[in-house]
Image (cartoon, rainbow, N blue to C red; front, side, top):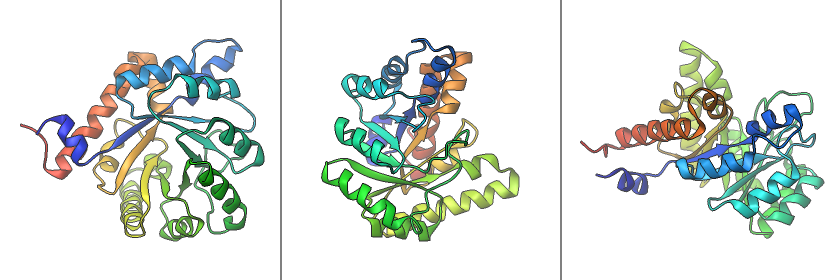
Length: 258
């Protein structure tokens, strides 16, 4: 079976996060490197979507980046946002294909874990409802915990993204345990009617065990790809990640061509 037929029959999408192209740009306060140029290059290299997180402190992606991405992209834009009135207003203005609600703390270096969809139900519900009414597909960034997935269902979010950071950071037996949590959570998501994505910290080394999980339909990867771009180019890094994902999914479904 051809690669194209394999991806159509058992698809696994790749979303490329271009936040840290903007981080490098902002270190000098100039215009380069341009995250929109990186996003267009990612499209050409095989990305199925582009992810950009507009933080409260604007440490990387800027408001103008979101405006330019909205105008420039052919593939869908996944707008990562905290559940705040400011971010809701911006999402409703630009109407991205999807909005992934993530936890955000000003002092963190990167997103440290998933949302508390259980304890935060009353806070999250109005934002999810507003985004949904605007035709924006809502996802929640959650730890691989079935109870949190059940809360996502009660909130009316159709998509969850499983936080893979603990798996990527763990080693040996601990990593296997974390992978088992992801496998179980992805299966539970399928059982309760949620579309399941995954991401955070994935590398060439760690992506294959996640890519073979049949209930996961999208991986979002960014920082690692931007880092690899320094050594071999962004298009090369994305194509290699795309190939690893496709090979893993094809082998797991028994459709790898000879």
